[in-house]
Length: 104
Length: 157
Image (cartoon, rainbow over all chains, first blue to last red; front, top):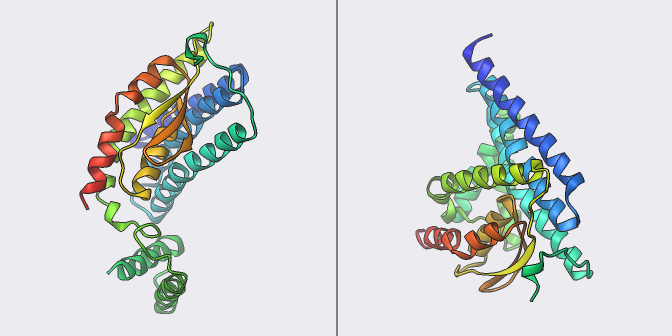
């Protein structure tokens, strides 16, 4: 196992760990809006670290360029989808669970 | 100029996705790129909104800072998730946005949502409604640093 392979394995392992953390968060959070915050750990650090590890394994190849485009796609599309979901939920009248000192 | 850069971008995208360098496929890619730009011009979507190439500098000046913020807040949310008492204090807050253009506002709204712990729920002109997971997350957003950085990069074109 070379240094690069080891680094890639560490990155992908960490990414997988953050995916599990995000999944646990989605189960533990109390309502729809707070669950979305847990999910965004998966799509940023989880997906980001896994793709970074794969790019390290790929080296300077066309595959790595495609992976980079994939990462860009995730980083542009996922906040848009998250925003659309949150807005749809609020417009349909789903009340968020708020902290005591946050009520107006 | 904008049409030329759109065609070049599409052609590079073709090359990266295809990976073949035979004359026929390269020519097919070039023709496709030009055709797509011609169609897009008829639809009148090759404008500062459809192809915001003047934001390209942002990739160098703003993304590294954004990446640092994403890692930082993702780590904070991770600690909250793994904490036995789940110490969240969710709230809806209004955040001022000082961007002049629609693309600038989209960048700011997407940056907020991309950072774990904050989600843009409503993106209006001058003010966003943001759902934050914690009191601290809402407070750091109200500090306005992200807003100022996006606006600064919007003006440098």
